[in-house]
Image (tube, rainbow, N blue to C red; front, side, top):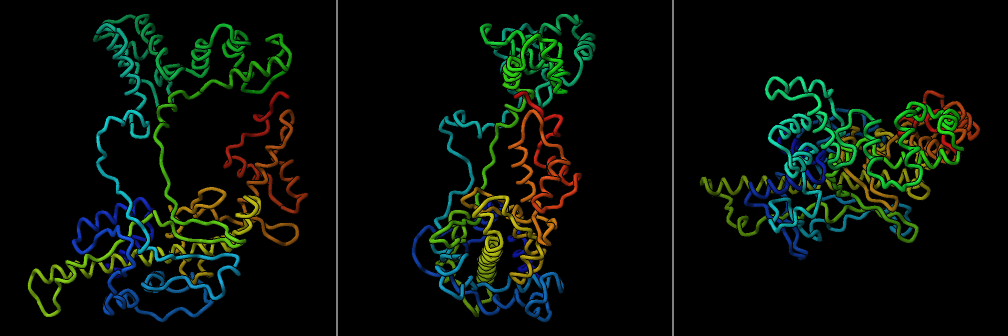
Length: 496
Protein backbone atom coordinates (compact mmCIF):
# COMPACT_ATOMS: atom_id res chain seq x y z
CA UNK A 1 0.00 0.00 0.00
CA UNK A 2 1.13 3.53 -0.71
CA UNK A 3 1.73 5.94 2.19
CA UNK A 4 -1.34 7.90 1.07
CA UNK A 5 -3.59 4.85 1.26
CA UNK A 6 -2.12 3.91 4.63
CA UNK A 7 -2.94 7.41 5.86
CA UNK A 8 -6.52 7.18 4.59
CA UNK A 9 -7.04 3.84 6.31
CA UNK A 10 -5.48 5.10 9.57
CA UNK A 11 -7.73 8.18 9.64
CA UNK A 12 -10.73 5.98 8.91
CA UNK A 13 -10.33 3.96 12.09
CA UNK A 14 -9.53 6.87 14.44
CA UNK A 15 -12.12 7.98 16.96
CA UNK A 16 -13.28 11.61 16.83
CA UNK A 17 -11.07 12.69 19.73
CA UNK A 18 -8.02 10.93 18.27
CA UNK A 19 -8.74 12.42 14.85
CA UNK A 20 -8.92 15.94 16.28
CA UNK A 21 -5.50 15.42 17.85
CA UNK A 22 -4.20 14.05 14.56
CA UNK A 23 -5.50 17.14 12.75
CA UNK A 24 -3.90 19.43 15.31
CA UNK A 25 -0.55 17.69 14.86
CA UNK A 26 -0.86 17.91 11.06
CA UNK A 27 -1.59 21.64 11.23
CA UNK A 28 1.41 22.20 13.50
CA UNK A 29 3.73 20.14 11.27
CA UNK A 30 2.56 21.35 7.85
CA UNK A 31 2.63 25.10 7.11
CA UNK A 32 0.32 24.57 4.13
CA UNK A 33 -2.56 23.47 6.39
CA UNK A 34 -4.62 25.86 8.47
CA UNK A 35 -7.86 25.83 10.41
CA UNK A 36 -10.46 28.01 8.72
CA UNK A 37 -12.79 29.87 11.05
CA UNK A 38 -14.43 31.98 8.37
CA UNK A 39 -17.91 31.20 7.07
CA UNK A 40 -16.93 31.92 3.49
CA UNK A 41 -18.04 29.57 0.73
CA UNK A 42 -14.56 29.52 -0.76
CA UNK A 43 -13.71 26.01 -1.83
CA UNK A 44 -10.52 24.23 -0.87
CA UNK A 45 -7.92 24.02 -3.65
CA UNK A 46 -8.53 21.29 -6.19
CA UNK A 47 -6.61 18.07 -5.84
CA UNK A 48 -4.36 17.72 -8.88
CA UNK A 49 -5.02 14.97 -11.38
CA UNK A 50 -1.79 13.28 -10.41
CA UNK A 51 -2.80 13.20 -6.75
CA UNK A 52 -6.44 12.34 -7.37
CA UNK A 53 -5.49 9.29 -9.40
CA UNK A 54 -2.85 8.14 -6.95
CA UNK A 55 -5.16 6.48 -4.48
CA UNK A 56 -7.30 4.74 -7.06
CA UNK A 57 -4.15 3.38 -8.69
CA UNK A 58 -2.48 2.53 -5.37
CA UNK A 59 -3.20 -1.12 -5.94
CA UNK A 60 -3.84 -2.67 -9.36
CA UNK A 61 -6.85 -4.84 -10.04
CA UNK A 62 -10.15 -4.92 -11.82
CA UNK A 63 -13.09 -3.24 -10.19
CA UNK A 64 -15.58 -5.48 -8.49
CA UNK A 65 -18.80 -6.23 -10.40
CA UNK A 66 -22.01 -5.00 -8.85
CA UNK A 67 -23.62 -7.37 -6.38
CA UNK A 68 -20.53 -9.57 -6.11
CA UNK A 69 -20.37 -9.07 -2.33
CA UNK A 70 -18.08 -6.91 -0.19
CA UNK A 71 -16.07 -9.81 1.15
CA UNK A 72 -14.79 -10.84 -2.30
CA UNK A 73 -11.45 -9.74 -3.71
CA UNK A 74 -8.36 -8.43 -2.12
CA UNK A 75 -8.92 -6.27 0.98
CA UNK A 76 -6.30 -3.68 0.12
CA UNK A 77 -7.61 -3.42 -3.42
CA UNK A 78 -11.10 -2.82 -2.05
CA UNK A 79 -9.88 -0.14 0.31
CA UNK A 80 -8.06 1.63 -2.50
CA UNK A 81 -11.27 1.80 -4.51
CA UNK A 82 -13.50 2.67 -1.54
CA UNK A 83 -11.34 5.57 -0.35
CA UNK A 84 -10.28 6.81 -3.76
CA UNK A 85 -13.11 9.15 -4.74
CA UNK A 86 -12.33 12.55 -3.20
CA UNK A 87 -15.29 14.54 -4.41
CA UNK A 88 -18.28 12.24 -4.27
CA UNK A 89 -21.17 12.96 -1.96
CA UNK A 90 -24.21 10.85 -1.26
CA UNK A 91 -26.89 11.68 -3.79
CA UNK A 92 -30.44 10.40 -3.39
CA UNK A 93 -32.25 9.73 -6.67
CA UNK A 94 -35.65 10.79 -5.40
CA UNK A 95 -36.80 13.82 -3.49
CA UNK A 96 -35.46 13.52 0.10
CA UNK A 97 -38.89 14.32 1.53
CA UNK A 98 -40.28 11.21 -0.16
CA UNK A 99 -37.60 8.89 1.24
CA UNK A 100 -37.73 7.07 4.61
CA UNK A 101 -34.03 7.83 5.23
CA UNK A 102 -32.04 10.79 3.96
CA UNK A 103 -28.42 11.78 4.50
CA UNK A 104 -26.90 15.24 4.27
CA UNK A 105 -23.33 16.27 3.60
CA UNK A 106 -24.10 19.98 4.06
CA UNK A 107 -20.73 21.12 2.67
CA UNK A 108 -19.13 20.01 5.88
CA UNK A 109 -15.79 21.73 5.31
CA UNK A 110 -17.39 25.08 4.53
CA UNK A 111 -19.76 25.28 7.48
CA UNK A 112 -17.86 23.85 10.42
CA UNK A 113 -16.48 26.26 12.94
CA UNK A 114 -13.12 25.03 14.16
CA UNK A 115 -13.39 23.82 17.75
CA UNK A 116 -10.91 24.61 20.45
CA UNK A 117 -8.30 21.88 20.70
CA UNK A 118 -7.23 20.40 23.97
CA UNK A 119 -4.36 22.34 25.38
CA UNK A 120 -3.09 23.93 28.53
CA UNK A 121 -6.04 25.40 30.36
CA UNK A 122 -5.78 28.76 32.01
CA UNK A 123 -5.11 28.50 35.71
CA UNK A 124 -8.01 30.55 37.04
CA UNK A 125 -8.38 28.65 40.30
CA UNK A 126 -11.49 26.77 39.21
CA UNK A 127 -9.80 23.38 38.90
CA UNK A 128 -11.10 22.51 42.37
CA UNK A 129 -14.70 23.23 41.38
CA UNK A 130 -14.88 20.55 38.71
CA UNK A 131 -14.09 17.03 39.93
CA UNK A 132 -13.51 15.86 36.35
CA UNK A 133 -10.23 17.79 36.32
CA UNK A 134 -9.02 15.86 39.35
CA UNK A 135 -7.10 12.63 39.00
CA UNK A 136 -6.90 12.10 42.78
CA UNK A 137 -6.64 8.47 43.81
CA UNK A 138 -8.16 6.92 46.91
CA UNK A 139 -4.70 6.69 48.48
CA UNK A 140 -4.05 10.41 47.90
CA UNK A 141 -7.50 11.23 49.30
CA UNK A 142 -6.78 9.26 52.48
CA UNK A 143 -3.26 10.69 52.88
CA UNK A 144 -4.70 14.20 52.60
CA UNK A 145 -7.11 13.45 55.47
CA UNK A 146 -4.31 11.84 57.47
CA UNK A 147 -2.25 15.05 57.27
CA UNK A 148 -5.22 16.96 58.71
CA UNK A 149 -5.52 14.52 61.62
CA UNK A 150 -3.45 15.23 64.79
CA UNK A 151 -1.39 12.05 64.63
CA UNK A 152 1.95 11.63 66.39
CA UNK A 153 4.95 10.74 64.20
CA UNK A 154 4.63 7.13 65.37
CA UNK A 155 0.91 6.95 64.55
CA UNK A 156 1.49 8.72 61.23
CA UNK A 157 3.91 5.98 60.16
CA UNK A 158 1.32 3.36 61.13
CA UNK A 159 -1.40 5.23 59.22
CA UNK A 160 0.71 5.36 56.03
CA UNK A 161 1.28 1.60 56.22
CA UNK A 162 -2.46 0.98 56.65
CA UNK A 163 -3.42 3.34 53.82
CA UNK A 164 -0.91 1.63 51.52
CA UNK A 165 -2.71 -1.66 52.23
CA UNK A 166 -6.17 -0.34 51.25
CA UNK A 167 -7.25 -1.43 47.77
CA UNK A 168 -9.27 0.52 45.18
CA UNK A 169 -12.58 -0.79 46.55
CA UNK A 170 -11.71 0.71 49.95
CA UNK A 171 -10.98 -2.54 51.80
CA UNK A 172 -7.88 -3.54 53.75
CA UNK A 173 -6.13 -5.98 51.39
CA UNK A 174 -3.88 -7.60 54.02
CA UNK A 175 -4.53 -8.62 57.61
CA UNK A 176 -3.86 -6.22 60.45
CA UNK A 177 -1.49 -8.82 61.89
CA UNK A 178 0.70 -8.62 58.77
CA UNK A 179 0.81 -4.82 59.01
CA UNK A 180 1.79 -5.09 62.67
CA UNK A 181 4.55 -7.60 61.89
CA UNK A 182 5.97 -5.33 59.18
CA UNK A 183 6.11 -2.33 61.55
CA UNK A 184 7.24 -4.03 64.75
CA UNK A 185 10.98 -4.44 63.93
CA UNK A 186 11.36 -0.79 62.92
CA UNK A 187 9.00 1.01 65.32
CA UNK A 188 8.43 -1.57 68.02
CA UNK A 189 4.67 -0.92 67.94
CA UNK A 190 2.05 -3.02 69.71
CA UNK A 191 -0.86 -4.65 67.89
CA UNK A 192 -3.32 -2.52 69.88
CA UNK A 193 -1.66 0.64 68.54
CA UNK A 194 -2.11 -0.49 64.93
CA UNK A 195 -5.75 -1.38 65.61
CA UNK A 196 -6.37 2.02 67.22
CA UNK A 197 -4.98 3.86 64.17
CA UNK A 198 -7.10 1.68 61.88
CA UNK A 199 -10.24 2.70 63.77
CA UNK A 200 -9.32 6.35 63.23
CA UNK A 201 -8.81 5.79 59.49
CA UNK A 202 -12.19 4.05 59.36
CA UNK A 203 -13.67 7.44 60.30
CA UNK A 204 -12.22 8.98 57.13
CA UNK A 205 -14.14 9.73 53.95
CA UNK A 206 -15.59 7.83 52.12
CA UNK A 207 -17.68 6.12 54.83
CA UNK A 208 -16.76 2.46 55.25
CA UNK A 209 -13.17 2.80 54.03
CA UNK A 210 -10.53 0.66 55.74
CA UNK A 211 -12.92 -2.20 56.53
CA UNK A 212 -11.57 -5.74 56.64
CA UNK A 213 -14.71 -7.32 55.17
CA UNK A 214 -18.22 -6.46 53.98
CA UNK A 215 -19.73 -6.92 57.44
CA UNK A 216 -17.35 -4.40 59.01
CA UNK A 217 -17.81 -1.99 56.07
CA UNK A 218 -21.57 -1.93 56.58
CA UNK A 219 -21.33 -1.64 60.36
CA UNK A 220 -19.00 1.36 60.02
CA UNK A 221 -21.57 3.09 57.83
CA UNK A 222 -24.47 2.20 60.12
CA UNK A 223 -22.59 3.78 63.04
CA UNK A 224 -22.83 7.12 61.20
CA UNK A 225 -26.66 7.08 61.18
CA UNK A 226 -28.57 9.10 63.74
CA UNK A 227 -29.54 6.98 66.74
CA UNK A 228 -33.22 7.79 66.10
CA UNK A 229 -33.16 6.21 62.62
CA UNK A 230 -35.98 3.62 62.41
CA UNK A 231 -34.84 -0.03 62.46
CA UNK A 232 -31.19 0.96 62.98
CA UNK A 233 -30.50 -1.50 65.81
CA UNK A 234 -32.18 -4.35 63.92
CA UNK A 235 -30.11 -3.52 60.81
CA UNK A 236 -26.91 -3.61 62.88
CA UNK A 237 -27.88 -6.99 64.35
CA UNK A 238 -28.76 -8.41 60.93
CA UNK A 239 -25.43 -7.30 59.43
CA UNK A 240 -23.45 -8.44 62.45
CA UNK A 241 -25.04 -11.88 62.91
CA UNK A 242 -27.14 -12.90 59.91
CA UNK A 243 -25.51 -11.44 56.81
CA UNK A 244 -25.17 -14.94 55.33
CA UNK A 245 -28.94 -15.46 55.57
CA UNK A 246 -29.54 -12.15 53.80
CA UNK A 247 -27.15 -13.17 51.02
CA UNK A 248 -29.09 -16.43 50.63
CA UNK A 249 -32.43 -14.53 50.60
CA UNK A 250 -33.64 -16.75 53.43
CA UNK A 251 -36.32 -14.31 54.60
CA UNK A 252 -38.23 -16.86 56.67
CA UNK A 253 -35.18 -17.53 58.83
CA UNK A 254 -34.50 -13.80 59.17
CA UNK A 255 -38.02 -13.03 60.39
CA UNK A 256 -37.70 -15.76 63.02
CA UNK A 257 -34.24 -14.70 64.20
CA UNK A 258 -35.07 -10.98 64.32
CA UNK A 259 -38.60 -11.64 65.63
CA UNK A 260 -40.20 -9.28 63.14
CA UNK A 261 -42.82 -9.43 60.41
CA UNK A 262 -41.99 -9.61 56.72
CA UNK A 263 -43.07 -5.99 56.27
CA UNK A 264 -40.73 -4.90 59.08
CA UNK A 265 -37.93 -7.02 57.62
CA UNK A 266 -38.46 -5.27 54.28
CA UNK A 267 -37.80 -1.87 55.90
CA UNK A 268 -34.70 -3.21 57.67
CA UNK A 269 -33.33 -4.51 54.36
CA UNK A 270 -34.09 -1.19 52.64
CA UNK A 271 -31.93 0.56 55.25
CA UNK A 272 -29.09 -1.90 54.60
CA UNK A 273 -29.45 -1.49 50.82
CA UNK A 274 -28.81 2.25 51.22
CA UNK A 275 -25.22 1.43 52.26
CA UNK A 276 -22.27 1.35 49.84
CA UNK A 277 -20.52 -2.05 49.68
CA UNK A 278 -17.60 -0.58 47.69
CA UNK A 279 -16.77 2.79 49.28
CA UNK A 280 -13.53 3.20 47.32
CA UNK A 281 -15.48 3.46 44.06
CA UNK A 282 -16.76 6.88 45.14
CA UNK A 283 -13.24 8.18 44.55
CA UNK A 284 -12.06 5.85 41.78
CA UNK A 285 -15.09 6.51 39.53
CA UNK A 286 -14.96 10.28 39.82
CA UNK A 287 -13.44 10.95 36.38
CA UNK A 288 -15.97 11.36 33.57
CA UNK A 289 -15.32 10.48 29.95
CA UNK A 290 -17.14 12.43 27.25
CA UNK A 291 -18.34 11.17 23.87
CA UNK A 292 -18.57 13.34 20.78
CA UNK A 293 -21.09 11.83 18.31
CA UNK A 294 -19.85 11.54 14.74
CA UNK A 295 -23.31 11.26 13.19
CA UNK A 296 -26.61 12.91 14.07
CA UNK A 297 -29.93 11.22 13.25
CA UNK A 298 -33.26 13.01 13.59
CA UNK A 299 -36.76 12.70 12.20
CA UNK A 300 -38.28 15.47 10.09
CA UNK A 301 -41.68 15.10 8.38
CA UNK A 302 -41.65 11.31 8.83
CA UNK A 303 -38.21 11.11 7.20
CA UNK A 304 -35.10 10.05 9.14
CA UNK A 305 -32.28 12.50 8.37
CA UNK A 306 -28.67 11.35 8.68
CA UNK A 307 -25.87 13.90 8.74
CA UNK A 308 -22.36 14.29 10.07
CA UNK A 309 -21.91 16.22 13.28
CA UNK A 310 -20.62 19.62 12.09
CA UNK A 311 -18.93 20.27 15.44
CA UNK A 312 -16.98 17.01 15.56
CA UNK A 313 -14.24 17.77 13.03
CA UNK A 314 -12.66 21.19 12.30
CA UNK A 315 -12.67 22.68 8.80
CA UNK A 316 -9.27 22.59 7.11
CA UNK A 317 -8.00 24.44 4.06
CA UNK A 318 -4.78 25.11 2.18
CA UNK A 319 -3.02 28.29 3.29
CA UNK A 320 -3.43 30.48 0.17
CA UNK A 321 -0.41 32.66 0.97
CA UNK A 322 2.03 29.75 1.13
CA UNK A 323 0.37 27.93 -1.79
CA UNK A 324 0.89 30.96 -4.02
CA UNK A 325 4.65 30.76 -3.43
CA UNK A 326 4.95 27.36 -5.11
CA UNK A 327 6.49 27.57 -8.61
CA UNK A 328 6.15 24.78 -11.16
CA UNK A 329 9.59 24.85 -12.80
CA UNK A 330 11.61 25.74 -9.73
CA UNK A 331 13.68 22.87 -8.26
CA UNK A 332 15.28 24.87 -5.50
CA UNK A 333 15.27 23.37 -2.02
CA UNK A 334 12.78 25.95 -0.73
CA UNK A 335 10.35 25.35 -3.58
CA UNK A 336 10.64 21.55 -3.24
CA UNK A 337 9.93 21.91 0.48
CA UNK A 338 6.78 23.95 -0.20
CA UNK A 339 5.64 21.67 -3.04
CA UNK A 340 6.01 18.53 -0.93
CA UNK A 341 4.06 20.04 1.96
CA UNK A 342 1.36 21.24 -0.45
CA UNK A 343 1.03 17.72 -1.79
CA UNK A 344 0.83 16.26 1.75
CA UNK A 345 -1.78 18.85 2.74
CA UNK A 346 -3.95 18.00 -0.24
CA UNK A 347 -3.69 14.29 0.51
CA UNK A 348 -4.60 14.89 4.15
CA UNK A 349 -7.71 16.89 3.22
CA UNK A 350 -8.65 14.24 0.67
CA UNK A 351 -8.27 11.50 3.29
CA UNK A 352 -10.52 13.42 5.68
CA UNK A 353 -13.16 13.82 2.99
CA UNK A 354 -13.00 10.11 2.14
CA UNK A 355 -13.31 9.20 5.81
CA UNK A 356 -16.40 11.33 6.31
CA UNK A 357 -18.05 10.20 3.07
CA UNK A 358 -17.53 6.55 4.05
CA UNK A 359 -18.81 7.20 7.57
CA UNK A 360 -21.93 8.92 6.25
CA UNK A 361 -22.61 6.17 3.74
CA UNK A 362 -22.32 3.41 6.37
CA UNK A 363 -24.39 5.32 8.94
CA UNK A 364 -27.15 5.90 6.37
CA UNK A 365 -27.25 2.19 5.59
CA UNK A 366 -27.49 1.33 9.30
CA UNK A 367 -30.38 3.76 9.81
CA UNK A 368 -32.19 2.29 6.80
CA UNK A 369 -31.87 -1.21 8.28
CA UNK A 370 -32.71 -0.21 11.87
CA UNK A 371 -35.59 2.24 11.37
CA UNK A 372 -37.80 0.00 13.52
CA UNK A 373 -35.38 0.42 16.43
CA UNK A 374 -35.50 4.21 16.08
CA UNK A 375 -39.30 4.08 15.96
CA UNK A 376 -40.07 1.46 18.62
CA UNK A 377 -36.95 0.70 20.68
CA UNK A 378 -34.66 -2.26 21.39
CA UNK A 379 -37.34 -4.91 20.99
CA UNK A 380 -37.64 -3.96 17.31
CA UNK A 381 -33.89 -4.23 16.60
CA UNK A 382 -33.27 -6.34 13.49
CA UNK A 383 -30.40 -8.81 13.03
CA UNK A 384 -27.48 -7.14 11.27
CA UNK A 385 -23.90 -8.22 10.61
CA UNK A 386 -20.96 -6.50 8.93
CA UNK A 387 -21.47 -8.51 5.75
CA UNK A 388 -24.99 -7.10 5.31
CA UNK A 389 -23.80 -3.49 5.35
CA UNK A 390 -20.70 -4.32 3.28
CA UNK A 391 -22.87 -5.73 0.49
CA UNK A 392 -25.33 -2.83 0.65
CA UNK A 393 -22.66 -0.13 0.28
CA UNK A 394 -20.32 -2.23 -1.89
CA UNK A 395 -17.38 -2.11 0.50
CA UNK A 396 -15.13 -4.62 2.21
CA UNK A 397 -16.14 -5.96 5.62
CA UNK A 398 -12.85 -4.76 7.10
CA UNK A 399 -13.75 -1.21 6.03
CA UNK A 400 -17.13 -1.47 7.73
CA UNK A 401 -15.41 -2.77 10.87
CA UNK A 402 -12.98 0.16 10.89
CA UNK A 403 -15.62 2.81 10.28
CA UNK A 404 -17.96 1.49 13.01
CA UNK A 405 -15.33 1.16 15.76
CA UNK A 406 -15.34 4.04 18.27
CA UNK A 407 -17.74 6.03 16.08
CA UNK A 408 -20.97 7.20 17.71
CA UNK A 409 -24.44 8.08 16.48
CA UNK A 410 -26.71 10.58 18.22
CA UNK A 411 -30.36 9.52 17.94
CA UNK A 412 -33.59 10.52 19.68
CA UNK A 413 -33.12 7.35 21.77
CA UNK A 414 -29.63 8.29 22.93
CA UNK A 415 -26.02 8.03 21.78
CA UNK A 416 -24.87 4.62 20.55
CA UNK A 417 -21.65 3.26 19.10
CA UNK A 418 -22.24 2.18 15.51
CA UNK A 419 -21.28 -1.37 16.49
CA UNK A 420 -24.29 -1.43 18.83
CA UNK A 421 -26.59 -1.80 15.81
CA UNK A 422 -24.95 -5.10 14.82
CA UNK A 423 -26.17 -8.30 16.44
CA UNK A 424 -26.50 -11.97 15.61
CA UNK A 425 -29.84 -13.56 14.82
CA UNK A 426 -31.99 -16.28 16.35
CA UNK A 427 -34.51 -18.21 14.29
CA UNK A 428 -38.19 -17.90 15.18
CA UNK A 429 -40.92 -20.52 14.97
CA UNK A 430 -42.43 -18.78 11.94
CA UNK A 431 -39.17 -19.06 9.99
CA UNK A 432 -38.13 -15.43 10.59
CA UNK A 433 -35.23 -13.99 12.55
CA UNK A 434 -34.91 -12.08 15.82
CA UNK A 435 -31.80 -10.16 16.83
CA UNK A 436 -29.86 -10.90 20.00
CA UNK A 437 -30.38 -7.26 21.07
CA UNK A 438 -34.16 -7.66 20.81
CA UNK A 439 -34.03 -10.87 22.86
CA UNK A 440 -32.01 -9.13 25.57
CA UNK A 441 -34.61 -6.35 25.62
CA UNK A 442 -37.40 -8.92 25.98
CA UNK A 443 -35.54 -10.64 28.85
CA UNK A 444 -35.08 -7.28 30.57
CA UNK A 445 -38.78 -6.51 30.10
CA UNK A 446 -39.90 -9.90 31.48
CA UNK A 447 -37.64 -9.60 34.53
CA UNK A 448 -38.83 -6.05 35.21
CA UNK A 449 -42.46 -7.23 35.21
CA UNK A 450 -41.93 -10.42 37.24
CA UNK A 451 -43.30 -11.07 40.71
CA UNK A 452 -40.35 -10.23 43.02
CA UNK A 453 -41.54 -12.92 45.43
CA UNK A 454 -41.41 -15.57 42.68
CA UNK A 455 -38.83 -14.45 40.08
CA UNK A 456 -38.71 -16.10 36.68
CA UNK A 457 -36.19 -18.86 36.15
CA UNK A 458 -34.16 -19.09 32.92
CA UNK A 459 -36.31 -22.05 31.84
CA UNK A 460 -39.49 -20.07 32.44
CA UNK A 461 -38.16 -17.11 30.43
CA UNK A 462 -37.25 -19.48 27.58
CA UNK A 463 -40.79 -20.86 27.69
CA UNK A 464 -42.36 -17.39 27.63
CA UNK A 465 -40.23 -16.45 24.60
CA UNK A 466 -41.19 -19.70 22.90
CA UNK A 467 -44.84 -18.74 23.38
CA UNK A 468 -44.03 -15.61 21.35
CA UNK A 469 -42.48 -17.74 18.59
CA UNK A 470 -38.85 -17.13 19.61
CA UNK A 471 -36.97 -20.37 20.24
CA UNK A 472 -34.02 -19.74 22.57
CA UNK A 473 -32.19 -22.34 24.63
CA UNK A 474 -32.10 -21.99 28.42
CA UNK A 475 -28.30 -21.66 28.44
CA UNK A 476 -28.58 -18.83 25.88
CA UNK A 477 -31.06 -17.06 28.16
CA UNK A 478 -28.57 -17.45 31.02
CA UNK A 479 -25.78 -15.99 28.87
CA UNK A 480 -27.87 -12.98 27.80
CA UNK A 481 -29.13 -12.45 31.37
CA UNK A 482 -25.57 -12.39 32.72
CA UNK A 483 -24.50 -9.95 29.99
CA UNK A 484 -27.27 -7.62 31.19
CA UNK A 485 -26.02 -7.87 34.78
CA UNK A 486 -29.24 -9.55 35.93
CA UNK A 487 -28.62 -12.03 38.79
CA UNK A 488 -30.10 -15.53 38.88
CA UNK A 489 -33.69 -16.02 40.03
CA UNK A 490 -32.59 -17.21 43.49
CA UNK A 491 -30.76 -13.92 43.99
CA UNK A 492 -33.62 -11.77 42.65
CA UNK A 493 -36.18 -12.94 45.19
CA UNK A 494 -37.50 -10.02 47.22
CA UNK A 495 -40.03 -9.47 49.98
CA UNK A 496 -43.37 -8.17 48.73
